[in-house]
Length: 263
Image (cartoon, rainbow, N blue to C red; front, side):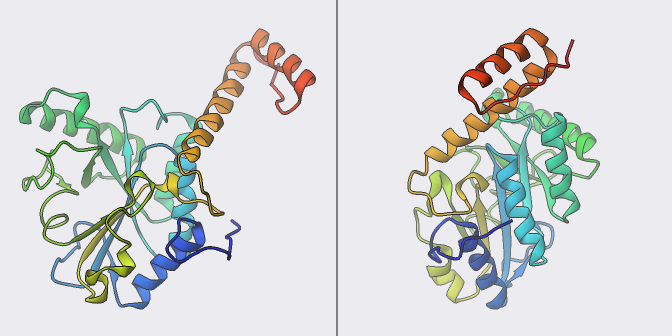
């Protein structure tokens, strides 16, 4: 995986991410999971919420594994952007798992009625489903775009720790690249980092790229185009007339070769 050496230490390239991790390690931080996290120690949790792209997550996971870092990857079950049961997506998730990273549930509470008993049952059900797919216990949950009522909720959910409990969130330093930037300051510039204080660092892998990118939102467009291309290939593999149509379009414009060996 080629990594650009022309990036800024406060940017969003793979080189910047490597620099970020290396600075944490050189400074004496121990990167741990939620079960081992001690808010009174120089502990850091590296968390990734996968909202869009498994491929982007794998790029990050490979870099972390090269440094001996085990991070926390959270996966949505109820999303239109990927399908954990599809062969291509599952293969990537299994690779991330086999690199030594932990897989947790990225729980979208907005999909359910806003009642504690409903959310408890739904989260438990989703954890069971995720465990059956990845063949590993799911021990932690992160909320997807959480409502304010969920931020700082102290009790566990579905018998599992969640990422917004005070001991992981309000009681320690917390930095996130939400919306494609560290809007409240870069973690390496923080007083918490200088003091080697406990920290949770959240990233969204889609924002991190091999080369510098000026149009951050264009990364979502690129993901959607790649996803559309994958779905067209899958449609061609399952429908001979559609494969022929794409083959004709390919001959006319170039750039796409459809399989025509489907029924």
